[in-house]
Amino acid sequence: MIEFVKLKRQYDLFAQEYEEAALRAMRSGWYIMGNELKEFESEFANFVGAKYCIGVNSGLDALIMAIRALEIGPGDEVIVPANTYIASVLGITEHGATPVFVEPDEYDCIDPSKIEAAITSRTKAILPVHLYGQSADMEAICAIAKKHNLYVVEDCAQSHGALDRGKMTGTFGDIGCFSFYPTKPLGALGDSGALVTDNSVLAEKLFKLRNYGSGKKYVNEMTGKNSRLDEIQAAFLKVGLKHLEEGNSYRRHIAQRYLSEIKNPLVQLPRERENGYHVFHVFALKSKDRDKLQAYLLKNGIQSLIHYPIPPHLQACYQELGYKEGDFPISERFAKEELSLPIYMGLPEEEVSQIIDAINRFKGE
Ligand SMILES: *Cc1c(COP(=O)(O)O)cnc(C)c1O
Image (tube, rainbow, N blue to C red):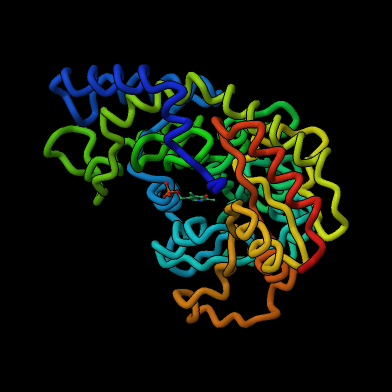
């Protein structure tokens, strides 16, 4: 069986470094908010090219805290792609703000030409998602935000190291939100996430928010959370960051093979923006025969996944928003046609060849 992802293979590539990092963190005797976190935050800020990095518990917490730090709440609207992972939307609704969905472009990211029609007097921010590891069209999005005086919060949970016109995702907007869930381009060996920003006022607020709203022990200026990135995960992330670019280029190599060697009229391959750097967290193809293709691949010993089968506006948890099937036809079609192929550091070339051969033999039944 060719599994969709086999993290053990990735771990084995750098096992010694991970094990040394774990021992170092364990033997330090300091487990929360110590040197490992400080060093990782500084290394990650440096890598992204942002002034501040604030480590937190998860990518969802990063999104929740970004919206909170911008003081967006009930009565406010945030523009978000209709074809994203639920967490992008949960970050908005956690504070009682209203998500306003916009359809994707042909690169699977929010379509800038449809954003202005969604702006109202209540709009406070645009939340683009660099879906599958490819940057949204940030030049166009930031121009719209500037014109309408809106914040930009980037969901970079899938785009560590991805570029738009040479600039790193996470540095275009007011705040960039990252997840380090184990399968992400930069993954911990557990949950964690981070925010990046150049704004010192926002950074100071975020440093407090993750720690009960307190900058000084037992002095609370706001009601915060406990959302800290622990020392052992920070130590793992320092190892992962060292190998991030290696992983990104290996996934790009596999993507290049899929793009040039898959030749089947029943399959539509993903498009890469010309002046971007796509890190292929997900290799997302589309097919009208998606369900048959997935079953066929499984019969041939190949696992695939769907990112994502139900768009947020049709999820039961958002029933009260009052959307129905047909409201966002492009996103709904993507949910029916999208299929993700295995792509990760440690995936052997022979398995890539088997996947390509199997897809090329698929006849639609
Ligand atoms: C993974 C992911 C998140 C959430 O990150 P967690 O660390 O799992 O909370 C948010 N947005 C997108 C687009 C993601 O892929």
